[in-house]
Length: 240
Length: 347
Image (cartoon, rainbow over all chains, first blue to last red; front, side):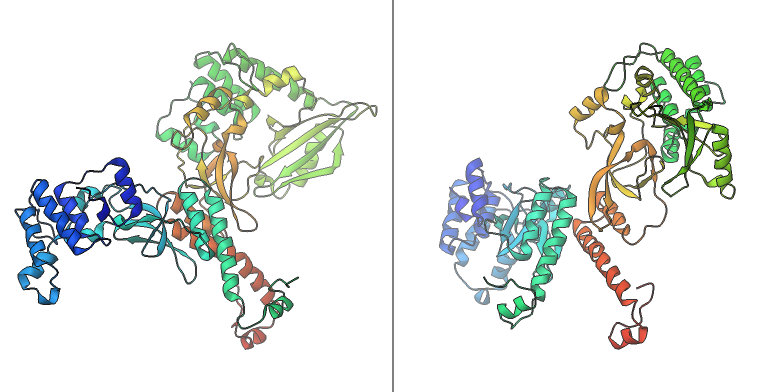
């Protein structure tokens, strides 16, 4: 069964295809569950395929996941729920959802490297590291949930343009950012190239200051004046 | 080695000296010879005594030819010849001659070398008397005194001949100076031989340390943040270190550092010789405080976002200072009326 179509990120999907990544039963079921690109019917068909063709396994207890002796049985119960809305579910049925995949954590390889310019949900940032790096993987595999599938990096504050370090929570949604970097986002290019050892710290800091200063100057441009008026004030070029 | 000689006393940096002591570093004969030569803490006489001691107590060795250093078959014989030449040129320096003049320059700690060019004397003694007169009140605070002997040209086609020595405030010679036009090429090859060497003396310094150079003869202003010493295996490619071990010279003893320029920009540049570096323990001024943040970033204590904010603050500080200087020209009552509040010195 090809589970790649359930991967939200086109770049991770292409990467998995290129390395012929093989899912085990549990991670395959999880990747189907978190898909934003497929219908509920496609998900149920995929889970049925897992039940029919892949080995069963137990679901280990985790802080937000209840222990279950059989993945296959769990998937059957989810399929039986059909498209029932949470309002129509019994407490037992709600528990099936709440204590399930959301509490699981998986390690998946990605093509992304430190310094890559990435995007998710219309946000752009520069990858610095994944949450599982620096010795955290073992702890996350034991107790992490899906919100711990983090990637850390540098974002630009849309207001004043300063750079801040933050994490996003679903690294399997990340894609390369292929658009242009304009305005304050130009700083991200400098940060990316610094993290990739393409430019020096000296150049990065000076670029940061120059870009921020230029963008602040644009923010200070008086509004409601014609270009001719601004030119007379010496803060715009006169049209030739 | 006898008890009145300790190589640690010759090391210019007190922090490197302490470190070598604390790790019990065992110096090779060549490293000792080099540290004695480069020392600014001991006079020529003390250096010669130390080299004689080294010849008596340390094994002889061969030194391979390298750019700037000739092949030296025996270190001991080389040191004897080196001392012989220093004595020869010191004698020439002091020798009174009818067509020679002496002049001097003085360097006080923390200041530029001040040259008394318009005072020339027919003998070293008269020159030294003038130096003493100049130093009456501040005798103990001289960084170094440089005395120059110049042979007056007897025709327009004659090349200028001169030499200089460093002395202390009681006239003891500490080393020959950089001006050696009187010295023959053959002798200079010996006297410059140490300049072609590249010793790897251990230091306590780490990347990101805030340091300063203690060498007043080669000025390197202000504190800096250490980036790399060229023998560091973690940051310098193995091929570079291998190359420097066979071909490096004194210019390759310079470290890579971060400094703040006069326009409050960060610069990555060549710094001083690593053997002259010491920890900087004095307070940092406003623009230098950025070095403290940079140091923390390099050592992994701060994220780069802190560095961005600090750098922005540093760059704006210069503009704020200019505004402050401008506002100081106004009366406080006018400034208060303009909404600035009272301008005080700590603003």
